[in-house]
Length: 153
Image 1 (cartoon, rainbow, N blue to C red):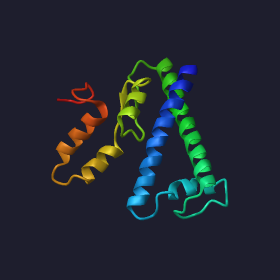
Image 2: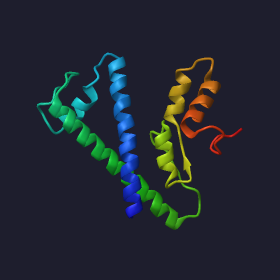
Image 3: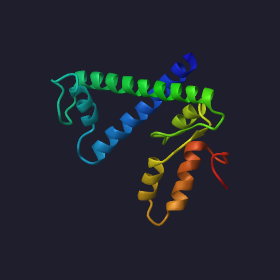
Image 4: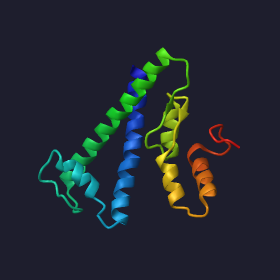
């Protein structure tokens, strides 16, 4: 259980940080405002947090604390589930939820036999009309590394 705790917290923090940066950048690019995601998270617990893109130091601290705590708990839950599955089956265990970066892929590899990358591939396809196969191949190589056994020739 300690391994699940250690790996789960690390994987959760890494995935949570990537997701936070991604959502903040996406909101900034779309014109909604960079601070909006953290403000909305903070507003759940701190009603004085702005409901728009204005910067607020308390909202930043509360939003990050809540987001990273939830991400860590989610990481622990997945790691513990994988650990339990290994006790009841000899089948390979695959994990996939929001995997889109090399560090996330490596974290999953510490406790699962396979990492499933779904929505990030769909987004890559959507951004690459006419070059879908090449874009997906480049994305996979960037995430899992060159000539990985995870990529079929």
